[in-house]
Amino acid sequence: MISHTGFLLTARRLAPGVVLPQFKSKVKSTEYKEEDVLAWNPEGLGERKVSEKKLRKTVRKATS
Image (cartoon, rainbow, N blue to C red):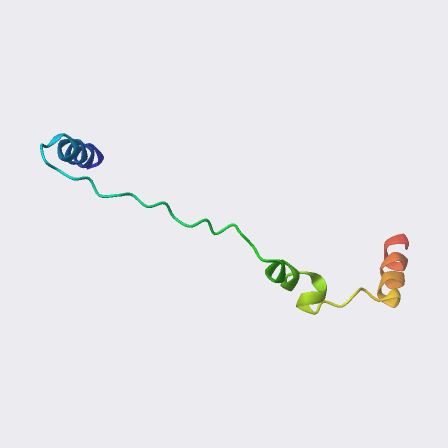
């Protein structure tokens, strides 16, 4: 099927009096605004810090 499509495109380009359609490139979606980036920070998501008590318990468990 790919070969057939390639043949049709080539034949169309070579045909006399054919005006080729203009190809448009896609818009890049990799441009991020600063607000978008800040929205995904831990503070922006509302994540809480690990409490000192939780850290002490984890260290105590790991060492015993």
